[in-house]
Length: 413
Image (spheres, rainbow, N blue to C red):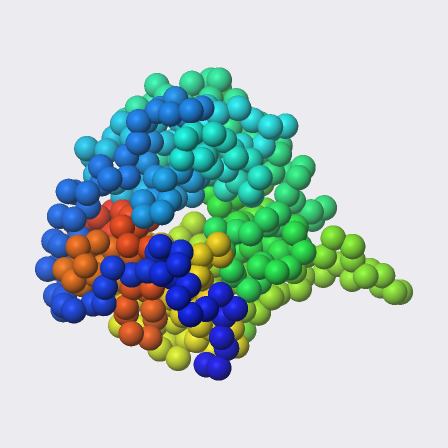
């Protein structure tokens, strides 16, 4: 591709202090050997991302690692889904820090500073109910779901519905999303992109809210109805029946009016890893997953020897340049969408495909560990080399016991 990212400047990574520790000098070719290397590394090094209470964070917690020494909402959730049992107190503490911190007009905190100060400026992920549910199911700690905490989580949904959804109930990104430079969102007007990934989080969050509410004798039917409405929007509006892919939507705040109100669905037809999230969230039927898998499995689109790209290679802005703030999700291989796709495939009865994708990702991470003694944040999709930020762990933690989970059909979320 001839596209050159504007942050791909000479010496960028060196100046930012996030250059790769080294190239891949040893390629691991066995999935079982790769799994053992990754599991051992995470067993021995998860403590590097553990933090004791500080500032306004009153519980122990987990951070992504590398240059990220802060509590982040979606990193924390995905770290918690794969962390070893030994990290139990830090997993639970991460969830409680996100839940117990004050709300600002029902808006939950997004992240903290390294010192424990709270930040509400970026779009917070709707995952408090899911996170509490995850802790209860992993560790049997139902006592942490107090009536006060649950009531507080339910109030956050008022913020999302009032401040982040449009009149038709489509939830839109108000700031740069976690998939930083997703071309369907980045550089566009705030609040005008309804993300397939964001809608998937809301689908799961409403279902989790219903379950937590019912634990305390509160009728959860309204939450289930709202979840069903989001699932219907994902499958009817975000999904293009011609190819099966789930796309983001353009939702202009001021619809154009001539003689007919222009308020219909406008898909933004970039194929990005945001399309993985409806599959992971179980908003898509198995036959839908099988159809869209044909696109993810296509080497001319997403598939590489190391897992799927974050953006289809056919998109005009596809690139593998080093970038931070925004991090580059316009091509490089990230572990997060790969692991989520693995679990979606397995739940759809596509175990062979799930095992194949698992092996690709584990061999990539294990080769980095074997060559550099660490993992990096993301990898060049064309050569499998690390791009930036040595020492990153974050959602790589979901690779812990990944092969075993797939073989045993375990779904950890």
